[in-house]
Structure formats: structure tokens, C-alpha cells
Length: 88
Image (cartoon, rainbow, N blue to C red; front, side):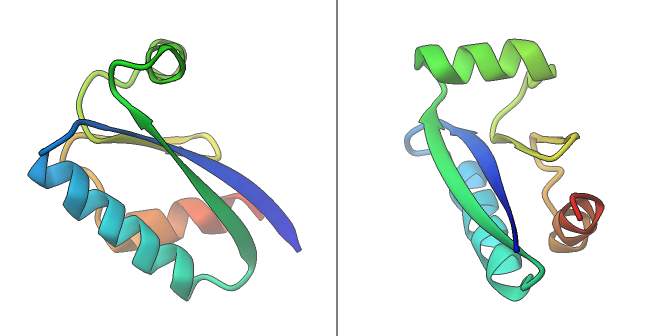
């Protein structure tokens, strides 16, 4: 089974970040074709800044599934599942 790492950039006390993380976790749980490791990074960490600059993430929450970048409020479950499908 294929394994992917999903970097997730968030801010403390960010309502949308919490909602996005919950949606992401639900989608990943439903998806059985890939195992996923969600790695959380606070927005002001060195790692988060490097990922954000490299991937063009300029809004929070931000995360990457394969080559698909999610940022801001663009985190609907169907879009996450589609991005996971593209990783196969």
C-alpha cells in the first residue's frame, strides 16, 4: 500500500484550521487505498515557512496532498478525496 505524508500548516485558535484538519482526518479515514501521515506545523515554524514558500501557500490553513495545494477555505472533503485519488 502506498504511503503519503500530508504537511498541514495551521495557526493556534484558528477556526478554519480546526475545521480543515477535522475534514482532512475524516477524508483520510474513509480513503483505504493509501495510508496517510498528517504532519502538523504551526504557521511560524521554520518547516511551515519552507513548505509555504515552496508550494505557494499564502493562506491558512494550508496543506499539500501529492501535487494538490489546499489553502484558506478550499478544503471540501470531495476535493481532498480527489487529490488522494491522484496520488495512486
